[in-house]
Length: 213
Image (cartoon, rainbow, N blue to C red; front, side):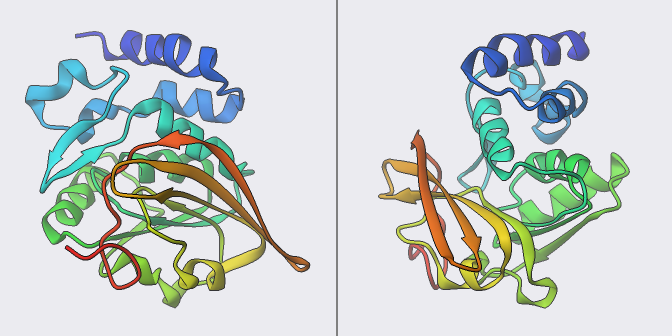
């Protein structure tokens, strides 16, 4: 199967026509092998325009949504990024190609273990994974230049704002369990500014400052 052709088709037909314009982001989506992050039975579907199951009731997000959230961070290459919801590891791999360091938190140990093994096989050495309550962030390595949340929050946990650098951006789906608004928060020395991007649907963000199990 020609996965390179499928990645190029994904970029040309799903991402560019829907407003993904950051050349660095587009180039990385042509490079990162999304099929490596799903089970072999789903390899043929890996570059289609929808989420895919990865076990434990979780999904690998739709390629367009991964690209949109990544583009919202406006990465330059030297950033330290916090990702909440490691899941398959695909979003972390995308970020690792565009930033200096990625710190990723996953509450489900089996998913974190599998993502770690895939990322190690693909020779990513600038990603750290922690199994813990993602709603509390990862204070040890704060502050971060960008924070990306790949699960739906009922509200924005205070820890994320506290752990975000001045000048940094937080990208997070906020709303109910059934539908959210993708929200970008920019933290400056003058305050916190919020922009709503679009509607979206993510699995729930579970934890102390999120949804209960």
